[in-house]
Image (spheres, rainbow, N blue to C red):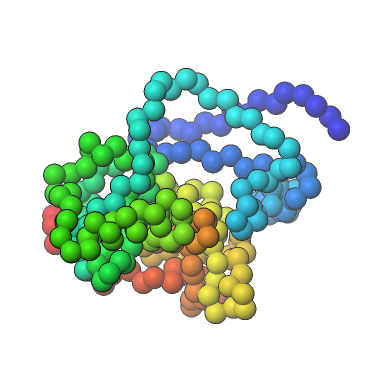
Length: 242
């Protein structure tokens, strides 16, 4: 086995919006043709195993600069009496953009609770006045626990969501967003989608936490393509707010 130091340089171009970098690799034991095909990259890293987080068997060490003290953050639950996800998404549009933010909706006791992971509570908009009547407090605790354990939760805002527009290969969705897995309904065992499958995103991609993995559930669509199982609202939630 050869050993040594390799430096890779990649020009990201103008950085106008928040972003994150995902590094993928292989120890040589799990390979598959890369995104550009076997003729260009015959032995790229294979797709991750569902529920797994390691693509190599030996330790991997990443070095990063000292970024100073971290701002304490946790999963924040907000219950504002929303009855539909559309209402909840309308409110989420008022939350300031934060790199790395994951915002989810949860149906609890007939209402929609919003959870936010990666947001400083001090930056919540003034409209985030929580309900304290009835079961609201308990509902928030349930939603927070679901998001924290990644058992469930419908992600509305997450890293890379703004890039998921138009027709995209599964491999590009996985590489450009925080989505970790794409599965297809209607097939035995709900298998993972092929990396080369094309997904008609319709500009509306709402993955779910399933067994600790941020998963996009798709269905077969016209033209031998896939489409997210959840259909977009007939009218965007903010279309009437110029």
